[in-house]
Length: 99
Figure 1: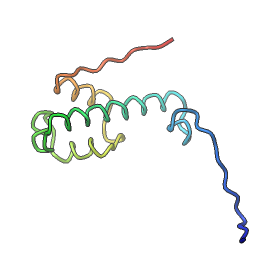
Figure 2: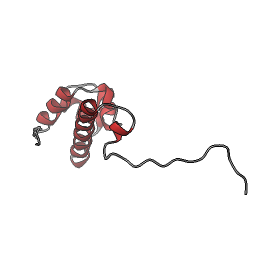
Figure 3: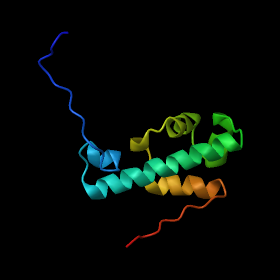
């Protein structure tokens, strides 16, 4: 049995991957909202069996922007843009504040 000089370390998750990788709580919440909304939009596009070209025409953006969306490139989209996409798909988004 060979010993390595580095030991593996397992850290429990906080429940938010963005906090776990070092973002502060406020930024982590925003990133989580964007990621969740992007996943829902991707599900809507797949459920409608839209090609990226057809989705781009419906959303009013280029096909490459749709590609970024379905590939989960959260850094390329503001929350405003994602809410606009949801509205254009006929499934308006809503943010609810929790106590």
